[in-house]
Amino acid sequence: MKKIYLYGNWKMYKGIEQSENFINDLGEYMEDNSWLRQMLKNDRLEIGLFPSFTSLASAQKVLTSTGLDKMNVHIGSQNFYYEEKGAFTGEVSWSMLNEINCNSSLIGHSERRHIFGESDEMISQKLRSALSNGIIPVLCCGETLEERENGETERVVARQISTSLQDLDNNKSVVENIIYAYEPVWAIGTGRSAMPEDAEDVCRYTRKCISSVLGEKYSGNAKILYGGSVKSSNAESLLNQPDIDGVLVGGASLQVDSFLDIVKSFA
Ligand code: 13P
Image (cartoon, protein in one colour):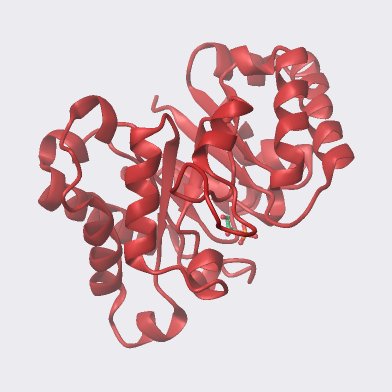
C-alpha cells in the first residue's frame, strides 16, 4: 500500500491557542485510535500541519512536548522569503524558520500567486532558497477556472513547474526533497473538488513536466498531492488514483475529526 501524505493548510485561521489545542487533540485522538498510530508508525502516513507564522513556534513546541514530532507529524510554514535577512518589511526569512526548527514550507500557493501577486520567478527563487537552506518545499501549481475553460490547464501547469525547476542544481539529495501539490484554483474553498480522473490526469501530467526538466529518475518517485475541497467523502477516490500521493487540505483540516476522517478508510 502506498504512503499517504495528509497535509493541512490552516491559512489565516487559528491563532496560538487554537493551534496548540489542535495538536493536543491530535495527540489524544492518536491515543484513542490505534489505526492512526499504526499508519504513522508503519510509515504509511505522513501528516503536515501549516499554521500561521505567529503560531509556528508554539505549535512546534507542543508537537515536541507531545512526542508527535517523532510520529511522522511535522509543522511547516505557509510561506517565507528567500533572503536570509534585510530590509524586507513584513517578510519572514528561511533563517527565521530554521531558528524554530520549522523545516518545511508551502511555496507558490494560489492565494500567494493571485492575491499577493507572486510571480513564477519569485516562486522559483523561493524554491532554490528552500533547497539550499534545509526547508522542504511544497511547490503548488494549478490553473484558474478561466484557464481551464480555455483548455489551458496543461500549458499553465507546465509553465509553473518548469519555471520553478529549471536550472536547479540537479543534486539528487536536494531535488528529491520537493513535494508537489496540484491545486486547481477553481476547486479551492468552493466545495467543488476536481473529479478524481481529472485530478489524476493533471497530476500525471505534472509528473511528466517534472520528468522533462529533471529526468525520469526524479519524476517517478516525486510526491504529488492534490488540493481543492478535499473532504472525507471525496478523498478515497482521489487517493486511489495512481499519480496522487496525498492531499493538501484547507477547510477540512481545521478540525481533528474531519481532517483524520480523510484517511480513515485506508487504515
Ligand atoms: P480547501 O480544502 O478549503 O478547498 O483549500 C485547499 C487549499 O487551498 C489547501 O492549500
